[in-house]
Length: 330
Image (tube, rainbow, N blue to C red; front, side, top):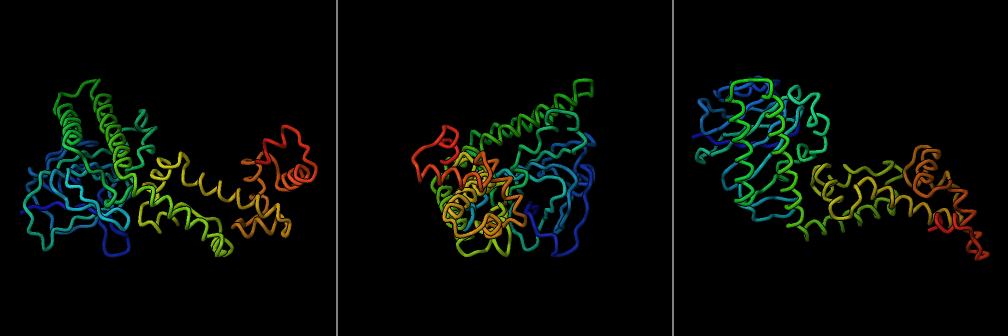
């Protein structure tokens, strides 16, 4: 029995095999290579089975597992999505196949593999980093409805048809465009998934706000420096990209923008308290150098910390302000 299980694994556990090309991957499963830089694979047609391997891949992968995958673990919670699952991986990521102790039947999994060289100089090559789901963890996979699964399957089928067509001057452009269309559909479906998990997402945003407040209240910033998106993503048991996309969807700000806005609000409070110097405020908020703090503050507020302090106090003391001061004292 052949059972495909793809999962991201940490790099330090055991030996990792480098799979640099699409053809190397195809040979691993005894699959036909239709093009050296891109292929559509159907695991039900594999002539070789792999019991266990961990590999560092050198190309992009998108797999549609057309089978029930059980409940989705999302953060620390479970969701009962039983539809087809899309899992994506990017070059340099470590993936694994583990069929040990598996008794599950052969799955009808299909996939698209494409090398970065295929998309160099194309619009997809320029925009590939916008498809942030390539850096999601497998427990953040895309779970499709029946209609969505048909669309994804159709896109993959069209790529295969083009690969089977006699190569001409239009081949590369049509293949890349169809891959881009597939990824655009996945982007749309991920946005739908964010919406359908609205309450779970809101819980994560609330937790993010709580952890952000605690980071400064407990003076973690003084020892660890400025808070990073990865720090909060790890606390939520999510990948940084998935966490960032979730925060952007729920708040309209990127996670980094959200953190910076909170830092600026705290900075304003401490500056106006007048107990500490600007340098002391900067260090307490995690800045290694006060000038970096002043630069960020001016970018967000429109004036330096000392100017903000002077002008805001003048407004509070006299009740008189210029339109510029009204704008930047808020």
